[in-house]
Image 1 (cartoon, helix red, strand yellow):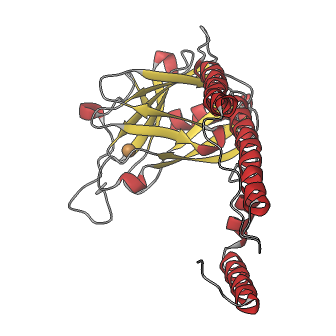
Image 2: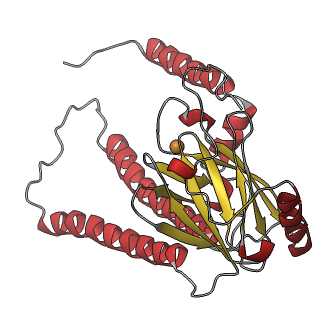
Image 3: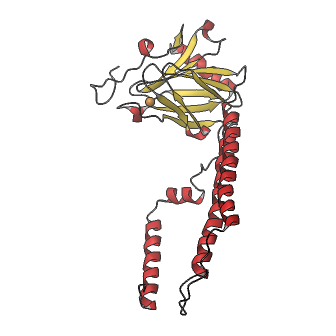
Length: 289
Ligand SMILES: [Cu+2]
């Protein structure tokens, strides 16, 4: 015999549960609620042309998951309702070895995995595609615990390299040109870091001894945030940087300003012995310049 609660008690229970759930939801911040309403997808469209492939994959994966969810939930609730306990207490027909059904629920997940896999590979190929002659090349160095950006554009500063490096106190800024393809060549002199600009919907590990690279074409002028997304030591959380996407004229002016400030070098700064930034472990504020 099951648990026999009076009807009013059960109803009270349901109302209490509903009230509790509403109270919990009301506790969420506006931001969390906004995120929930768009299934945690970014509010803004991707800031690069390549990012659109990731956004599409993300969106359609949600659609596929929801469609599957609706079918599964539908079947669950149908069965719960259709075969609920009745007053006559009759046991429903017991079925075993339903071959068509078993074939269906073996094949359906395989098809879903194959389709998701195919679209993932297509999106991955699109975002990892490398053009032979990108408009710009930036050698990105992730080092404990900041970033250095070497602008490898050949026609600036008599063949020298303009760079921008973070210090223990100031985070560096990466400047890119709207509508032009830039290749990031990632290197690390110490441990594994990861180069992430959330608005670009793209990140890639920065691995010592490996030259990882990818290209993006920023499609909107603006300021974005970048960060290290691989736990790389005590000051990992400080490995932040700013990204500014500007016009060609502003970019040229930026390079001239960097040259005027003396941020030029014969060779790109690749960290290690060349590192211009060291965060002093002994200094709780980090750094001692
Ligand atoms: Cu890092």
